[in-house]
Length: 286
Image (cartoon, rainbow, N blue to C red):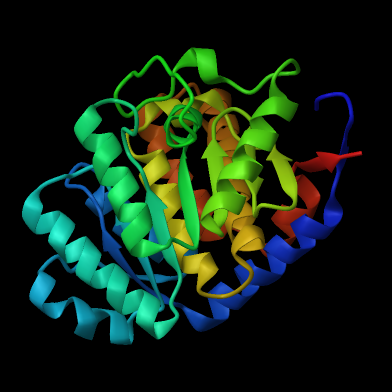
């Protein structure tokens, strides 16, 4: 890991505890997500031990939020009807004190998306904002080289910029009073106070559509069961470790990305609490 950081076992233990709480409670997560990844998000929630609901009609949002444990808003699919449903769901979730996870898909790709992201943050008052580093940088007002919904290689966290990026994410979290998570080769999360750098995963995760959307969905399940920062760390670490196991499996057997995708779900399903403490890689400033 980068110089000046030290491993933090406390966040790994907290992540494991929230994971166990989620397994015991099986939270129902309402996901207003996009057509490309809706099935994967639902199956990922089932694999981890939670329960998905993918209701979209604005007229039923208040009823759905009464029975749901949390709300995930994914901005990959934009349109007046979808955005109206998101706003109604967000207002209901806020009034009921339920966690809201916002995934600003494609932030920075177009002026329209930037406008919608800003509007949804104001309306939802999210508990967690989770995006790739390019999307998060865009929300911070930084200049990016957009690749649509994918992060630019120029925005990779490295030894030269990790402290700067950490402070940028901490400032965004403090501004909006929420946890912020920027996922990538090294994931950076903050609640406006603490900054964690997570380093589990594999580059094969980039070869599967929707791993970011799935991550946001799992954050929704875990946020229903504990502290938002630790819950976000738990979701990111869980997917990273499962990805490592899946990559090891396919490389050992000479398989490809299709098998990796299947094994990713398998290892999420098989995840145990001690995987977090034995294999998790979470670091803070020394």
